[in-house]
Length: 72
Image 1 (cartoon, rainbow, N blue to C red):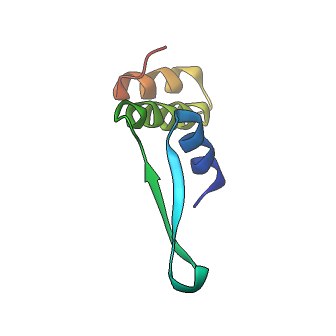
Image 2: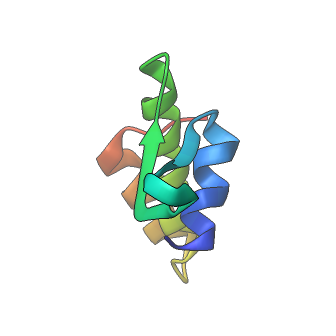
């Protein structure tokens, strides 16, 4: 999983984990939990903001945030 996504999961309060299989081998699949569910909304807002920050013009950033309903 992308390190930036892991950072946003932690920043939102979500938990990232991997299941241990037999013989103490980590399952390669990653799991993310968001509890309480409001944390998932915070994670989504962080992703939208991160995308907006990648835009060249502030005008584009505002448009993306408005489209997804992300406000300060």
